[in-house]
Length: 239
Ligand code: ADP
Image (tube, rainbow, N blue to C red; front, side, top):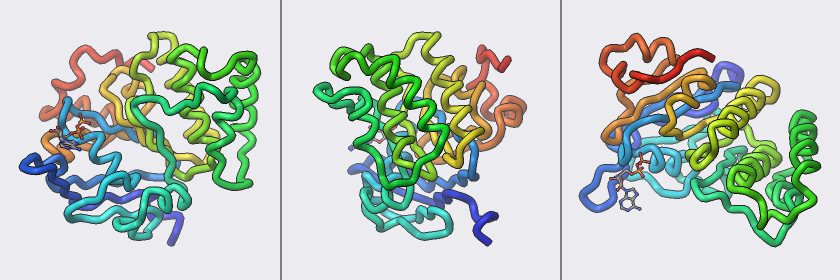
């Protein structure tokens, strides 16, 4: 039954780089319509997990399923056509193009969602008097995310999208991601080291350490879990 099949299932994925076990049996499930965060210390395997999901790297063993379909051996571009969108730690915005051209070049199909049109129109109108090359860093990140959304993905994977943003921009950014999950069919998967940001916007948080998933649950569940509560010390949990 399609409605009950999780959007994404990662099962016992392993990937080594030489002697480094970047993923050592990682498993996680992403439900439709949620904001799902992956957190963990530096070097714990977060980016490798995201790359295994989007197909930028191959895995040594384990499986990745999108909407019940095994995509473990599917290329990154084919996964993108199946509805897996993503952004990168360094925004890949083409300086010579306008804001709108940058957003529009990500379009996957005629598939349009009204919300995107409104959000994009609002941002593009504000910024499109300048070329992308002169946009401040924070707005380049927005452009990158809007391009990924404009492609009409079922899941958009964001690798530390708030890195380098000011506090105000982070709040605005978090609100954008919440709006996306609430008002569209897009599921948001976000790798983030900023627990404050994640705490306030994520439905589910998956904690990675040493290439394994050591906990997964709502922010409230994780806060009450003694094994990982130390990660949340000092995190402002007032939404
Ligand atoms: P995180 O995103 O949590 O900081 P990564 O997934 O980037 O962690 O890295 C996990 C581990 O795998 C680290 O020890 C890292 O050095 C190693 N690693 C990741 N990618 C590569 C690579 N392409 N070549 C060699 N080692 C890598």
